[in-house]
Image (cartoon, rainbow, N blue to C red; front, top):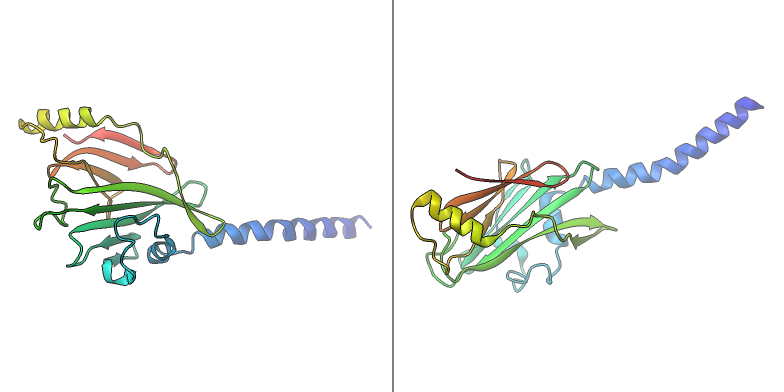
Length: 197
């Protein structure tokens, strides 16, 4: 009787755990381009106007889970990369930049009047939702000051801070006027930052 009872308990626990195991596995099966197709128009304020999203995908690197977004019509660029979290889920970083000057396009020419942002998303109930407060509290004035100390040149306030996502690295690089000024390294739970000397 005890053996039958133990078998019944074992079967019950197996049935209870299997859906959770299947769900965890499902989260890790999505490729970077599948995540890109899940993005809503609201999450793509700059490039959401393109009805054919495939037209703005310039490069897909499946091994590094990286996408470069650019085309001849769009005077700007964007990137998307997938980070692994320690709980088995993913953190997705997405950048979009739009520039009015013809020379201000990929690869990362930080020109005046380039506008854009970086955002982070994760999958919840099969929908990508934005995750606030991912980056440490960065003071723009300190980054501008570090740039001037590093280069010996005055930082032009028209130039914006740009985020370069990693293709074969593990860090996000903050650039100012084409110069690397700050590095954000993902540790599985958060980003650790340091100045780039």
